[in-house]
Length: 139
Image 1: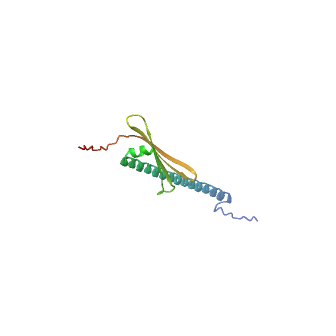
Image 2: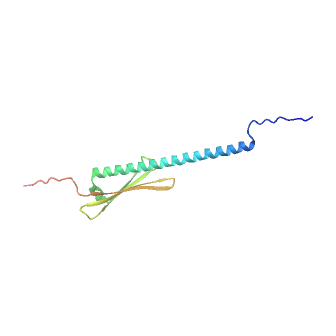
Image 3: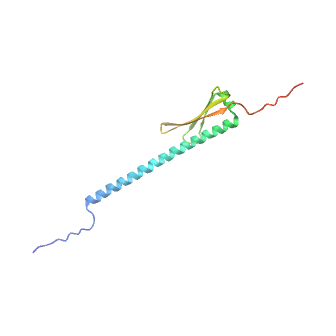
């Protein structure tokens, strides 16, 4: 008489379970790495956007005040603490020797995680004032 045991083939073997777990872990780690990279890129893009905004504000100020004020200084700088991390801006002017033409350089720098970043913009502006002084004759 032969006794046959009935083997139930339902379910997964240990090897199949470990392999599936390893594949799933790899996929999850890949997704976490992609998410982390995209968040880092988004944060860096936001910082560059803030730096560009600061440069635009400085150009507007330069246009409003007039380049003559900055020519007298030669160089102006400051810190914008409204945003994290602190942004340092610098405006420098240089005479180009051509009909009151000045090279204006605006640089914004900041440090994020002990790594320096900067954005620099150069433009040329006419140093001639559009303000006309009225001369009065005294008799």
